[in-house]
Image (cartoon, rainbow, N blue to C red):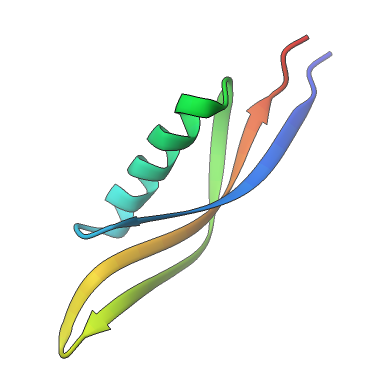
Length: 67
């Protein structure tokens, strides 16, 4: 029997929402093993003048606990 756990994380990128997701999962996976999926809960941007300067995502990441 497998037990899954979730953790909420926030990640950012200067490029795109997709890059923020990739960077967040990559960094989370350095600390936590057995990552199986993520749900993007929220997206937002930072704006300076008329320019988007940063893309941010908040995700719920699911991972499987070791036996």
